[in-house]
Length: 380
Image 1 (tube, rainbow, N blue to C red):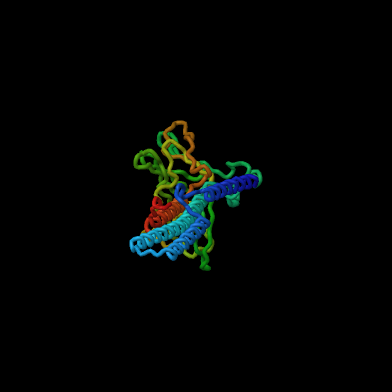
Image 2 (image 1 turned 120 degrees about the vertical axis):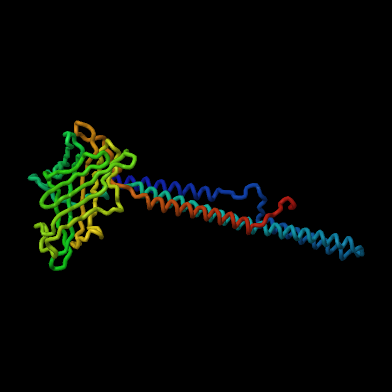
C-alpha cells in the first residue's frame, strides 16, 4: 500500500509541475515579438489628434478662401491618407488580438495532448503487484497442510523429464497444471470437470527429428500431447500444438448427456506459436497461462466439449543438447510475469500524433488564408 501511495505522489507531482510550467510559458509567450502592437489608448489619442487637425483645417478653410482646386485635392488626399492609416492600424489590432487568442488555444490544446499521452504511458507502464493476485487453488497430491504448502513453492509443481534413445534429456517440464473440461449433462446444463496433471503420468514421445519433438502424458484415461517445433531459422523453439484425447464415458464426467464418444480436442490453428524461446534457454513464467482446446469443424466430433489447460509456475525446455540434463539460462515471459499488449499504447499514441498534426495544419491553414499581410513600414 505504501508503494501505491508513493507512486501516486510522484505521479501527481509530475502532473502539477507540467501544468505549472505550461501555464507559465503560455502567459509569458510573445507570439509576434518585434512587430508593432498598438494599444487602445494610442488609438484614442490618435483620434483626438486627428479631430483637432480637422478642426484647424476647417477653420483655415473657412477663414481663407481657397480657389485653387489642386490645393483642395491635395488636402483631400492628405485626409484620405490619414484615414486609411487609422483603418490599417485598427485592422492590425483586430488581427493581432485574434492571432494571440488562437495561439493561446493552440498551445493549450497541445499541452493537453502531451499531458494525456504522459498519463496513458504512465498507466501502461505501472503494473503493481497488489493488483495482480492469483485465484485460490486447492493443493493437489500433498499431505501438507494448506498453510505449509502455500509457503513451499514446489508443493504443487510436477516435473516431467523425457529422455531420447541415447539417454540424454530432450524435454524437461516443471509445472502446476490443471485441465478444466466444459460439457453438458442430462439436465441440459453446462458443467465443468477439473483434472490436475499428476506427478507420475506415463510419458512417451519422439525426439529423433532435429526440428520437431513430441511429448505425451497419459493418465486416468486422458492423453495430453504437446508438439514442439523449431522456428524457420532454427534459432528458437515453441509449442506448435496441444492435443487432448479421452472418452466421454470417463468417470470424471457425471451424468453426461453423450457417453461413449471418443473426444479429440486441439488448440486453435490460428495460434501456431506458444511460449517462443531461444534455443538453449528454458522458458519461465510465474503467471498462469491458459490454452483453449476444442474440436475442429472437420473432425466430426459431436461432443461439444471445450477444454482449458491452465499452467502455473511454468518452467520448461525442449531441444536440450546438454548431457547434464539441467535447465538452460532462463527466458522469462516478461519482467512482471505476463505479456504486455502494445495495441492500446500504439492506438493512443497514433491518435495523439494525428490530433497534434491536425491542430498544427489547421492553424497554419487559418493563418495562410485568413490573416492578411500588413505593411508596417508605411506607418508613422
